[in-house]
Length: 410
Image (tube, rainbow, N blue to C red; front, top):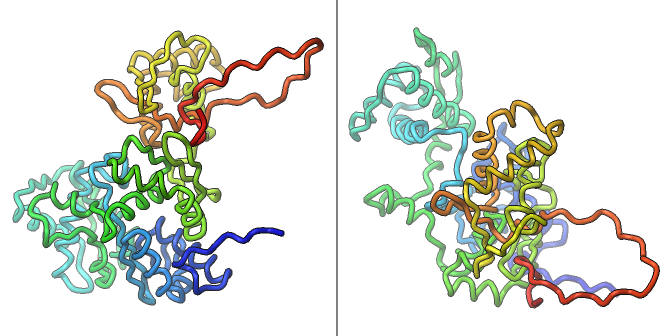
């Protein structure tokens, strides 16, 4: 007789179908914190509205997140990334980010519609008020255009007549911009009234909810692919060690996420890859070289002569070592790679390092990197079981220690 998994209390009053729909909506909101008609997955907004009470209670109880749901939009106020430089919108430069903030400030007093030229003038005036230099050159106009396109993508403004792309030309073209004030008022998530400096705002935006340790750890599990005990404060590491099994059930039931518990920490994966922003392994040259480089970087290849693992399971890798591994792979399999990706070895090495950091499989350490023990889950394994050899069966060797052993194993 099959044993039924106990349903977490946050979904205890729902049928299995409704609970599954709530989990589906929760996953959509994690990926698109500002959900609106016409935007990505906007067709699910009616379902989010239907289950808004359950979703609001679930996000508040499990993650300390506030959820605002109306018929025209849903806004999940997630925690900020803190000092994690790997998080954020990669298409926006720091200059473009600044223009997003300046544009939002300028939009608050212009009403429902505004000419592009008037909006640009207001943005530059706002920049002047806070001592930000707004140079009227091609690079500056591209940053401003990227900021406006970002707000268009969020649905905060729309191009009613003309386009913001006209800013890049030598003679900027006019356009009529419509402002959706209901969405504009929902963008800011950080507590501006409580912060006096930018650094303080970043810290406050990333601070855990009312439950402190519980919310802080569970946010890491939901928002990051790997959580290592060595990266957590002692109280958070102890809480996670004691509640691994409970959290595994909770994350699967409420968000459709699968946890893999290991000696060094917890890896969380989305079997649908819906929440996966960087797919790995992948088919591109950089991704394949990264995958094939892992055994040597982790000291698992035949060429490795010494164990460089640290007590926390991380393996230090120098720029020279990473360059040597990449060069060897390019030289040994010249026909396997894109010529464009491998013609500049230094650029290839930089791309491999950047991918490892994005995957949280590496973190900068001085001039080099520290490779996470979680990388062992991608080491190659034999596809076939060797045939049994004739003669006596040799005695099995003592099991070796793995940097990502199952919890409780030695």
